[in-house]
Image (cartoon, rainbow, N blue to C red):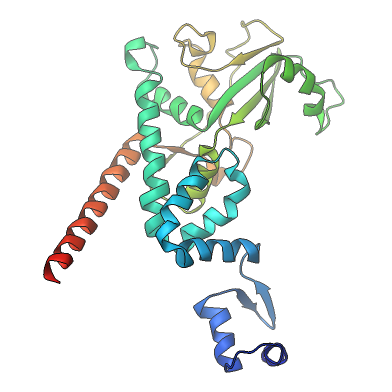
Amino acid sequence: MLALIGKAKKYTCFDFVESAFLVDIEVTVPIFNKEGIYYRWAHKSIMEYFNAEFICNDVKEKQKEILMKFYESDSNSKYRNVLDLCFDIDSKTFKKVIIYKLVNDYINYCKKHYQPHNNYNVPTSLILNRLAFSFSGQNTIKIGKIVDANFSDDFFKGLVPELENEFADTTNLSFVSLTATTSGEIAHFKKYERFHVIIEILKSNNVDIFEEYKTINITNKLKYLPRDKFYIINDDVNHPLNSKECFETVNNLINDSRFGDRSRDKLLSLTKCEKMKEIIEREINDEISDEELLSNLL
């Protein structure tokens, strides 16, 4: 590596010590990881790495504004790696901007949906789980005959015309899971909101606003519902999927990670989000107080 740096140095106008430069790219600004006798990029995309460095360091005065634009973008999935790197580089600012905005949005969402006065006649814990499942996107299930015996991974393509008839806009609509029951299949589809990407980033970084969710075995308590139709899940107390008999089964059906990485079986916790909101507000107020004290001393 030192030999390569020495060769590259000849094509620049900079004067530097090769060994010091190597320390910089391995430790100070870790662009490469050394694995035995090999060097690998420390990040999936070097362009995304430098984008994140630029946001967090070079345009510090606009960092909060840029992060908020990422958060509010309906296509923020394209910037997931950049956002993840921004968390690594400057978690303090990320916390004050992205995490603070998310927990506030979730708290406000919970105040407006699945309200107790509607009397769903189910335990509060199930209501809180449904809120968390619904916040990241619109859930829809279809009950009935969905695929033939020759099941293939691309069967979703065959449902596209039917989905387009059902939904005015199929952008960000994804097939999530298929559950086989004695009376037919139950397919779960989800139209993901922009919050989904942020939530996944915070899960992977173990931010303390989640609680574990344990999926129970799914029993077919939906067998008496009409077949071969889509059910868009909402908080209408009269919705057939919100009945006392169906509520928990539906929660388990719309668990995004049911067939994926079990470590992802985490849901936003309203209590923890409220606590995080208080912590961040306290930290912001402390910073303001410190700045005011310093300004008075100067």
